Amino acid sequence: MANVKQQLETPSLSPLGYPPEVYERRNLNENNSALNNFSRKLTSVLGSLFGPRGGKFLNAPHGAFQDSTDQTAANTTTAYAVTFNTTDFSNGVTIVSNSRITVADSGIWNLQFSIQFTNTTNSSQDVDVWFRVNGTNAANSNSRFGFAPRKGASDPYHIIAAMNYFLSLNATDYVEIMWRPTDIGVQIEQYAASASPTRPAVPSAIVTMSFVSNLPTI
Image (cartoon, rainbow, N blue to C red; front, side):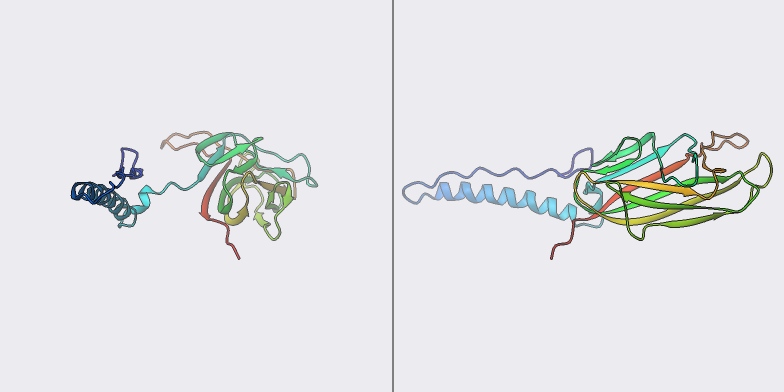
């Protein structure tokens, strides 16, 4: 009951004949056979879904995105949205206007991010990272990350800022990850692939969005 994409096939309804004016054993047998056939298909689907590996058949909305550019702040009195230029996976979640993580379904969502920050200054610095939903700051969503001074003139201090957060969203709502540093020497930076040994590139920012549950009702 599963196709090559590991998606369960919906059992097709078995056609039932119209009953005759008088009782006919053949008609009853045909209808019973059709119902038995549908029941077997339904039992097979439910058995696969609720079996030990049934989760592989579930198709939950999700999205994963990253950015391959450096992102800077022009001043310390403006809130900046983290941007993304690459879509890794998209199923009911899209990036709009480079920064708006937009969902197609209402529900509780889990947003997770990791941002590669660098501090190029000779002093300790901080950065605030928080969320905005449809352009409005989400209450109590801010996090503050602290950075040590740079290690040398060409060797800034590096740190990954990461966290996850649950959000209640309606269909077509969008979320933005906002940031504000204490000095413009704090940047979001990407690094190209390296050699000796071969190492992958470092995206400046990564974000994933996973559907958790439908909205609770009272």
